[in-house]
Image (tube, each protein chain N blue to C red):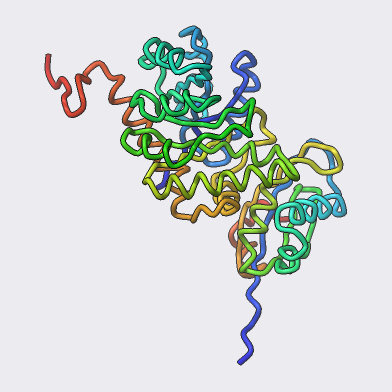
Length: 109
Length: 239
């Protein structure tokens, strides 16, 4: 029997005084993932960016449900992107995009 | 509802605007109580001002002093003078003698590694055995993990993993604090739960370290500092 792949969607608030574009955001995330867990850990995460928005300044990431703690730890460990101070806050986690939207309808564009 | 406590918010107390920003962010992140380290000679007026800032955002303020004695004699002297002035007394262990003395003194609440020499860590089996007989807690500052990178972070996580295992073995409560000196290093309690997995702390244990353990220290010390307290188990009920 083939088990469906379980995923988790994370709504991430980007806290920075500067504008952080999609590329800089993902570069910061991958740097943190590689620093903390290496290439082997990164390969287990199946991490992709679903949506990034500048107004409001947030993003939605998707990862494997088994790697949720690793992704959250990586996001929490980020202190700068492109040499600018930054911090990320996970506002919500859900198994579906619809569920995530239901959790935090106020902060999603 | 669970109360989250950050006992080490290293806000610069001379800059009240910055204190306000950091306390506001702590409240926004979900903390109900913050401990701000104060200098031993702080005025009552400044404590009142910080207390006002905290009460505006409904965060309880806990007074804390960080001691960094060079010798065990200096530690005993400081404890004698400062214990009844502050709700939390933390000792940064810069030498083995100080660490051993701090672990066996019931007036010490928190044992923390020395921030100026993070490689000097003395929390081992002997220290844990001494601490387990008293009410001393082991404090972990998460800002150290956030602010280090590369090999220093690898070494830090390795030390924390060993120390957390020793603390668990001897039933010593662990307290997780932010140790943040600016807003950029502050994270929510749930982010700290995720970061605690980096040194093999289970979710339930990390939750206790962020909530129950620091709360019990504050409640115990507030009871002791009350004018009705006489001795453990003895308090004045009527004058």
